[in-house]
Image (cartoon, rainbow, N blue to C red; front, side, top):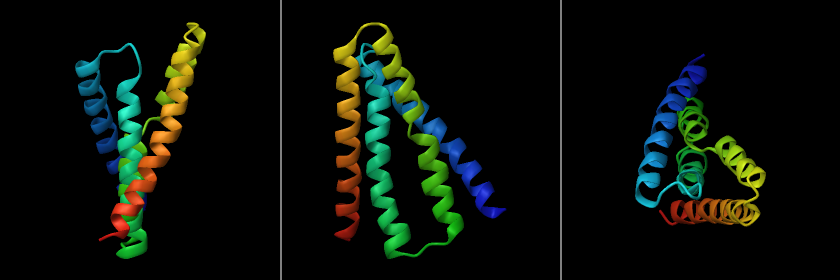
Length: 124
């Protein structure tokens, strides 16, 4: 039950953080491309790689902490459901180049950020 509570609390925090970062990015660069969602996904993947190494490989933190941070906070923070609907909307609007760009950027930047997070944490 403690893990469920940690996930719920972390999910609420992650969702609020996602909204804040995405909104901030859109105020900086506009809404012509889903930059806010892309920024959240890249940062979330970087954090996932980094925290996974620290919490699982290095510290062996309790299942409650791991669940709260990795599943809760980062699960609430990252936005692949938002990514999917925004990409779908770009396709429906006929913006195929933007849709393809969003898919490619999300895939490569998020995988790259995860790899970087793992490398950074393993250097500690």
